[in-house]
Length: 445
Ligand code: SAM
Image (cartoon, rainbow, N blue to C red; front, side):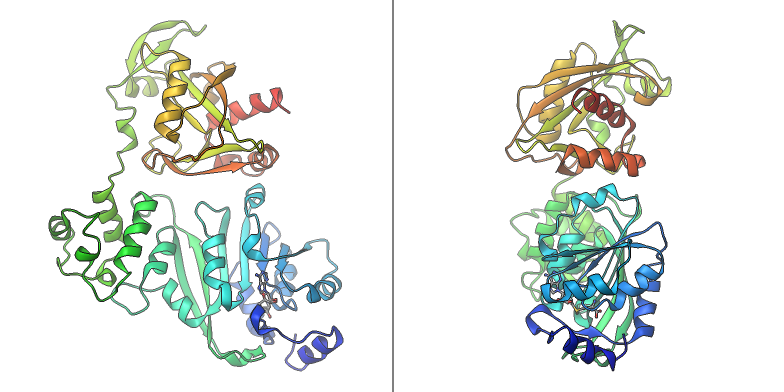
């Protein structure tokens, strides 16, 4: 929409821009087209747009053939947007983007997020939509320039801080360009910038306990001028040694510490036991014959290398809303890292029963105890990696504290959503889970 058209449209629909909703409408069509180009959209994309306003970006996203779900808080714009984009690829939701449930997005094959964000809640929106793990493969935002600089900042700069590290731990941030306040109507008091945010590739950075990472970072930046060792004294007991090992001055301040060094500090404070310590190579699994009758034990490495028949359990935990808890497997797992899996799962060790393993895994992985019921037994096959699987069901409504060494993240999800997700993106899941979920849904449609 051109500069000259916006006041006329606003008059026609009886809307005057509201400052409290961060309403500054983009009137530069070339820029709007350029912004949307940076998201590399095509007909396979499902785009979520936060705050479409009068549709400056929406128009070009639809032009690319993408489906667009727009979330707009201002009810006065609804009718206008519906009429302007009477397109089967366009859907609009009236509401606050901060309240939007992102979980159903998992059922879409490829999700991208765009928005010329309302500046009064930009940071909250970023944290909400980028909350890890997220199904969003790319985010393209227009932000207040200062915030954009903070997101992409490097160590030893004024902009580098807790928010930088919070986002950069999981995402790459590219500062694409600065945008003058003149391209908006009404003209805001500040300049803007475009950033593109994409998830980091698997293995790009070492893993760490993200809860501890964020806590240390927040403490470290709570008083920027103070030495990090002093601010984190309560948690980082041997700071001098750690600093020396990481090549840091013991008097370093938080802003001098790189992302990789923050991860290393986190791992010194709260080491992630490598996943193999749970099932170390010398640990012996229960071997079985074709009828699942016990044969004796063999070391884990031999079992997997030779596809020997063995036993495993999968546990599905449901809450009282009927949602199932799924875990994202740790990035340090040797099998299916960063794939979604049953609430808890693991191998039956030599001499252990299925029931004992199920209770043990539940406690080790989720830190909980609850009664479990075996609901199925799956035969060993290629799809189960030669495992006979005991499938268990349990109910739990309390707090779940996943073991960070085993589990990257966890979510409660409606079973119908899991069905759609499995259909849309089966590669997001460990194969044993797919087998178990199929059986569970056959029994509990
Ligand atoms: N995308 C349009 C453009 O580029 O011209 C409008 C951008 S304007 C900066 C921000 C938009 O976000 C406005 O349409 C405003 O009504 C909307 N908005 C403000 N708060 C919102 C919220 N909490 N949830 C969804 N939309 C919101």
